[in-house]
Length: 493
Image (tube, rainbow, N blue to C red; front, side):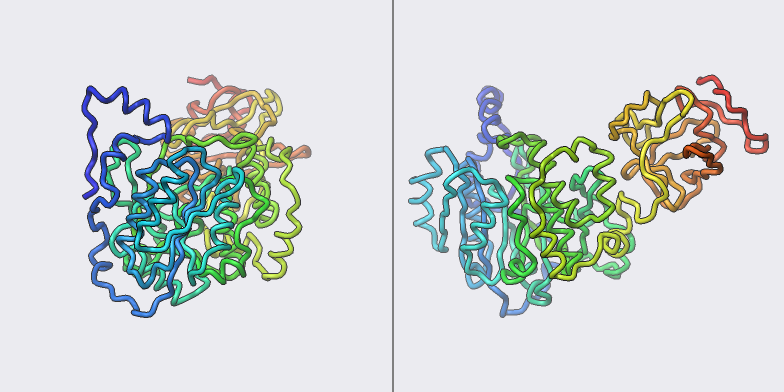
C-alpha cells in the first residue's frame, strides 16, 4: 500500500553507496514487489465517474538510460496491472544507449513473459530524452501516445480519464496529477490537485497554487481538469495525429530540458490546450540530483534548448530571460527557421496573447515600463536582491552589469519586481522587503515621479525613496507629511 521502507541501521552504509548509482534508494526499491499495491488517492468524486466504453487506445512510451531494474519494471507492471486491456495497445521501451548488462538480454527475455506487447527499441548512441521519445513515438501504433518516465507507478483508474478527455477534444494535451514517490523510502504520497505548472524568468518550470480564476472557471468542482499554463513534461498523453500536426518535439534540442515549456507554449499559442486531469494519478520518484551526464555539460544543453524556445515562441518577452541570464546569448542555438515556419503555418498567436489569456499571473508582466538595473548614478551602486528569498530585505551592491540579482522590472501596475517577488514597504519605518507580488498596489506601489536626461529619477514607495540610500534599504523613512528629504544619504540603522 505504498508504505515507506525503513532500512536497518546495520545496512545503512551499503544503502548510501547504492543510493549514488541512481540517486535514489536502490536498496529500498529492490525490497519492494514489482507489482506492489497502492492506495486509491483519488478524490471521492473521481471514484464514481463513469467514462465512455469506447475510448481511444494508447501506446505507452518509456525512455530509459541505465535505469534500475526494479524501478523500470515496476513502472511497466503498474501500467499493465492498472490499465484496461482494451485501452493499452502496447508498451514501447526506448533504451537510450544504456551500458548496464542487465538491461540487455535479461530485459529482452523478461518482457517476453508479459501479457501485453512490450517492444524494446535501442538507440545506437546516447541521444537524450527528446530524440529517444521521438523514436518511440514514430514506432507507436496507438491512437494516443502516453509518455511516462522510467521510475513511475500508475494508480487505479489512471488511464481512463486521460483518454476520455482526449476523446472529447483531440487537441487537448493531458497530464495526470504527479504524486511523489520518496527517493529515500519509496513511500507513495498523494500529490495536490491545487497546483499547476508555471515558470520563472530563468525559464525554470515551477509549481504554483491554482489561482482563484481557475477555481471559478471550474465552479468549485475539483474533479474537472485544471487548465495549466505549462506542464512538467515527464508524464502526459496526446492524440497521436495531433502530436504530428502540432510539430512533435523540436529535434534541434539536445538531451533534456526546455522541451516541456516549448511544447506548452506551442500547444496554447497554436490552438490547443493543456490540462491536468485531476482524476488521474501517477507516482514519480523525484530525485534531488541527476545521476546522468550531459554531453557538453548540463548548463550548456539547457541554455541551448531554452534559447531555441525563446527565439521561436516568446517574441520580445525573451528579453526577460536574456537579461537575467546574459551569458545565454553567447550560446549557439542552431537553426530555428524550420520551427519558425511551423509557427507561421499553424497561424499561432503571439506570446503576449499567451500571457494575457492563459497565464495572466505569470512572473513575466504583460505590460511594463522598464526592464534592467536600478542604479544610484552617484555611487554606482545597484539595487540587488542579494540572492535572498521571500520576506527578506533587498539590498545594494556595486553595479556589475551581469544581470542576475540586479535585474528588476517596473511594471504597468507600478510594481518593482524581480521574478515573482515585489518590493514591499509593509511596515512603517521598516526595511524594504521582497514579498510575493499581490497586484493590489498598496504597499507594493512605487511612483517613478521624476525623469531627467539620462534616465535617472526617484522611485518612491510608501514613505520610502530608493534614491536616499547609499548602502542599504533598512533606513528610517520620514513621515509622509514632511517635505521630500534631501538627496543626501541618511545613516543606515
